[in-house]
Image (cartoon, rainbow, N blue to C red; front, side, top):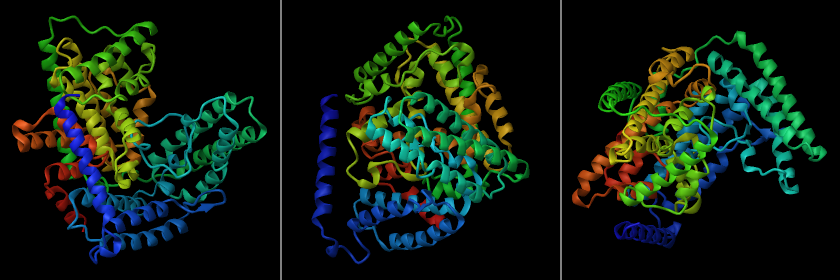
Amino acid sequence: MGIEARSRCISTGFAVFFTALLVAAVPVSAQPDGGGYQDLLALFEEWRAFERPADRAGAPDYTAAAMAAQHRGLKTLQERLAAIDPSGWPIEQQVDHHLVRAEMNGLDFNIRVLKPWARDPAFYASVWTDQSDTPAHEGPTHHALVELWTYSFPLSPEADKRLVGELRTIPPLLDQARANLVGNARELWQAGIGNIKDQAAALEDLKEKTAGAGPDLAAAIEAARAASLSLVAWLEEQAPSKTGPSGIGKESYTWYLQNVHLVPLTWEDEVRLLKRELDRAHASLRLEEHRNRDLPLLVAIASPEEYDRRANEAVGKYIAFLDEQDVLPIRDYMDPALRARIGSFVPEESRNFFRTAIHFEPMTLWTHFYHWWDLARMESDPHPSPIRRGPLLYNIFDSRAEGMATGVEEMMMHAGLYDDNRRAREIVWILLAQRAARGLGSLYVHANVFTMKEARDFHVDWTPRGWMREDLDLLGFEQQLYLRQPGYGTSYVSGKYLIERLLAERARQLGEEFTLSGFYEDVDALGVIPVSLIRWQLTGKDDEIRALVAEGK
């Protein structure tokens, strides 16, 4: 890190420190009648506790009566939040107020429109074998997940006991699902059956992995597996009766985008943006191919040994580029965070889209792994505000998390990462084309213009070089996720656009004082929050957020 970067870090740290002192020094009784920041923090803690459903027969309660009662209680919390007037607070505290408002809007939308507990069988999947690369799981999840990736095997006695307790929530939750799942969303229903089948398979694997464990764990695994298979049979029996649309419609999509994820766009805006990016990616790929026509084609990695060597070399080369070119401040966690996620060799016939890209040039995906730096930063250097310290609910982080991870793929290319390997630039355009195509497909599905099958076909057809294949699981997983979680499928490209626009605006604002490393450092310091709020806090301009609030009234 250079002297300038260090001085920026020190000044930012002092600003946060003194802000915290000022907040702590003002007693609640001395705050204006509309309530102060301390009141917001107290309400946030109350809100997060309220957001978790009560227990019913050993599992979270998502029955219709429970959801109706929670909706009534939510209105009271929203009124209390509205009574807190943040207009005289520092911008960073006003941003926190908007984050709490957005989360409450998220629950309101889930209860009014999305209703995953009533429409989406995948909501009842409990077992997760892998960590998400974003602050929380992508898509709607219930409140009693079994995060198998957090366990080390063989289990310690304490871990064995904890896992037994977690697994015991699965049978009562799946019993509850039969009464709760009254929706008529045909494609969500059909796709969700696969998630519960996958859970049964994961539990079978867990049974083999813990074969020497005690009787309580064996019984809990078998009960959870049996309950999963029983629910699969019931879902398949009910499936022919499900005939309705699964998309939420353009109007609801826009409301969710603007009032929950705080993205200053509409459904129509995102269609125009993703069409433009899809065209730009394809045109740029052709221009790149023409430029490189006399160069040898890229050759895919052909063995496990070559994969390990090239994947690790690419990590070192990427980190060195960032450091030597002063693109990003280098932190201790960056190198190990990437090396922990490089994966392993995959035979050509089994490679999904992203594994194909990695096997041609690993660095093209290592740039997207900005995700893992976000997670490492949240753990090693948590934000001082408790509102921003952990994951925001309802995937509200997506414009920043996915937008940055996708944005740096192209940004690093333009900054010179592939100057010695121009063919790798072609992969960057292929990555963008794939994300624009899948995002457009998700928009049309939510508008009930496309079926999921048509979205998958569009996704495959518009991904260059045949790298997106119908026969691999990734395609179905992605389109199902984006149907389950409105706005997520487009966030890679729309978030990228918002971050690029912020970079341009910040550069104009700072003039000769602007540096690329300073920009990334400033953005990262504010937490994994919507880009519209990052923009306000960095530039002082609140026009976007004021417009979003006005639209939501």
